[in-house]
Length: 477
Image 1: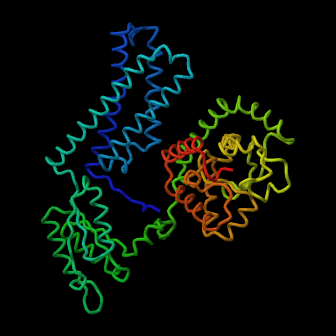
Image 2: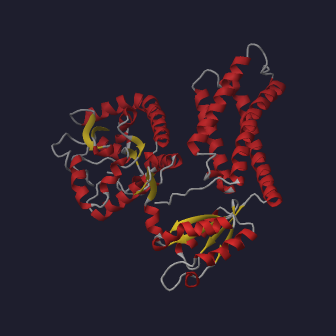
Image 3: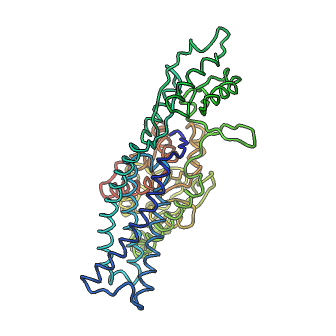
C-alpha cells in the first residue's frame, strides 16, 4: 500500500495551480477561436460572428470546455500531487490533451456536425498542442525565475540523527524540493535525553533559535510515545523563537503506512486507509467509464455478433445460447453472470472449472474461450451495474466458500465490483487455479489493483487484454 501523503499548499503550489488553470482556459478557448479564424481565412468557412453560425460555434465551444473539465476531473490535472513536480505536470498535460481529443471527437463523430468541420478540428488540435507546449515551457521558466527571485520555497527543518522517521520525512521533503528547502538539524539523542529518559527541553531552544536565525519557520521533530507528555513544553519553547513545531509520532514506518489516523470528535481512531474506489468521486468516474464502454460494446459489437454466435452455438450443441451462473459480487452478494455457452449442457458446471482438453467444451466454445469472446455478454452485467469492465474476476459461489478458508485476505477482493478483465488476468493469472500458491498470487494482484486504482490503470488493462486476445494466452482454455 502506498502511504497517504498530506501535501500542504505552499506559495509554489498555489501559484502553479491557479496559474495553470487560468492559462489552460485561455489556451483552450484561444485555440478554438484561432482555428475558426484560420478556417475562415484559408478554407472559406463562415465567421464565428455570422448570425446563422453563431449558435453552432458556441454550442461546440461549451462542449469543448466541458470535455476539458471532464478530463481534469478524470486525471486529477490540478491536484497537489499532479502539480508537485514538472514531470507529472507534463504527463498530466499529455493525458488531458489525448483524452480530450478522443472524447470530443467521439461525441462529434456521432453527431451530424463532424464531417463539415473536420478542418476546424484539425487546426484546433494542432494549435492546442503547440500552445500547450509553449504554455508549459513558459510556465516552467517563470516558476524557476520566481523561485530564484522571491524564494517561493518553504524553508523547513527536520530534527533527528539515525532516526527512521526523520530519514523518511527528509526523503519526502526532498522529493518535493521545488516546494521545500530542507535543512537537517542532526541532534544526537544522547545529548538531549537526561538520565531519567526525559527530554532536555531547554537544549531544543538552541536549535529552534538557530532555525529562526536561518529563516526557518517550520520544524518537524519525531517523538517517541514516552516523550509526548513534554509536547506542550517543546511547543512553547519553539513558539518563543517564532518557530512552528510539528511533532511526529515515532512508529515503525511500515506500520504507519498501513493505518491512517482520523478523529471522531476528539477521539483518535486508527483505520486502514480506504481504497481509491471507496471514494464517491472515483466510483462515479468508474461507473461513467463502465456505462460508456458497455453501451458501445453492446451497440457496436453484440448487436450483430450475438445472432451470429447464437446460430453457431445452437448448431453444435443443444441448450441455451447464454450460460448463466451465480457468482460472488461486490460485498459477496451473489449475482447472475452471463457468458456465451461454450460447453455441452452438464451437471458439473457450478462446481468444476474448465481444464485443458476438457471434453465438455464444444469446437466453437474452444474458440470463444481462447479469444475471450465468451465473456462478451458480461457487458450486460456491466451495464446493469453488477460488474465493472475492470476488476477482480468473479468466482463461483462454491469456490469463494472454499478459498476464503484457505487464502489470507481472500474476501477483501469483494470490496469492489468484479470485472470482465483484471490486473491478475493480464499478468497471466487466469483460468482454473488448483494450486493455492497461484491463487494467493492472483489475490495479491487483485488487492494491488484495488489499492492502486486509477482511471488510466483501467485503460491500460483494457489495452493489455485486447493485445492478449490477439496474441493468445497459455491459460485460456
